[in-house]
Image 1 (tube, rainbow over the protein chains, first blue to last red):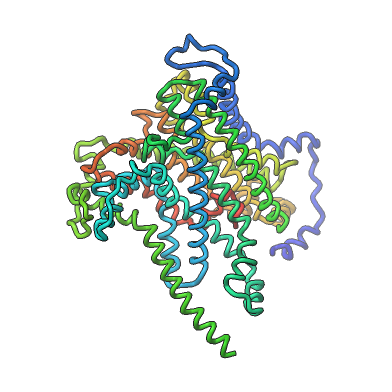
Image 2: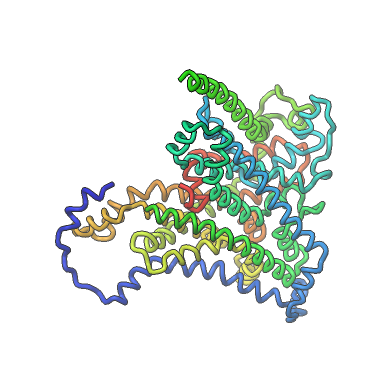
Length: 312
Length: 283
């Protein structure tokens, strides 16, 4: 937009400055990048390498002298341990359920908010709020204020309709954790999908409407294909965060009743059981799982990214 | 023509109905927070009742209890620790990310997309994968229960996001303007201050906000690496995990007070928040 005003200036002869050598220039371009790059490698990559090394040792921190190399024993133990296998399964269930449900709910909310109605801004603000409550505070809210069987709001409301008064966390522990996470993550999905909806080609939509396409047809053949990338982005970013969830599991059930996911299990095996080697092996397995998700995530993000660069 | 008019009218009626549904869902989603806010102003005995007491007298007792005048531990050290850890790490993130983003957008290095993806890939490395070595290092270096260790870790946690966001914000600065300023004889500091900063500043502010929110919310590192001295606000909140109904108003007051900075920041920057959280991929 400013190209027209700068064009005459750009055409003016360039001042001849003494040119430094090409190598020096290359380093001058790279230099601003180096502090961040070196910092990231030291703080994130080195610890992971250390975890990898520790994972091959039998090492209980209460008996540091008994530390010895055991090869892949820890991995065998992790993969054959019933509790750990359970936590792998829990992690998958938790992540998939939360991502899918919050994505569907987020889509419904985004479609509703994409229309004009009175107080749309207020409703949007109300809907974003759950995402902005500190995760531990949100988990406490669900644990004490909503789920409590005696004075929780859920049973309080059920009281009015004469419904049953279940003990939510004991009866359906995993579902209880999932519901609280769905409540927190639906707004995030909604925001991403809303951004997607608002980037639709309005002329194309208008043309389809003039041609007599029904609302459903427009949704099915125009909106949904357009939203595909945004749905993928939401699913993948959501997965990355929810696979790593610690706060809700730790707060609502303390990993009990079959809700311990991998991050909680890793935390517990070194923080409480002091099994450094086992914890590290479990940690490495979490990384392998994440890499599988991340490979897809990077592909999606890079395709969005290419589209953006191409547009520029 | 009349059919279009009819259709438009019926469309408007449906629109109002769907608006109502949106309002309803908005209220359902907000209800837990509204209930938490109301409960925080109730006395403990009114807070823990079934059926819920909607009309009970309002009191500030929950807040008084929370801020320690009721005999409990004071939350101030934790709040101050969180402010320092989040604030200083955000500052560090900006100091490291700004030059990096500059090198990735305005005068891009070769293979700059590869570098960008390296930063992103570190974000996909789960926190638990490095937790143990960091714990052992901190223990040996005598840095357990030290807020500066959290500052370093929060900086590394947010740096990739910040580099991505700022790269996309700085890329919005037209290269032609920078070239023009350079031709006019402006030096780098002048160009940064007069040309780049005004365009990129809102984006930089949003980046800082998101980094602050993530640091403020963080629990796992803080829980494992701090104890009494360097305890942060979320760790302070974990003290309520097993608390019983007698402290319900206090729990609500604590949760609200500790969430307040994030709620305020998030409401202030709703749009930038999405862009940041989706790593600049959604505009």
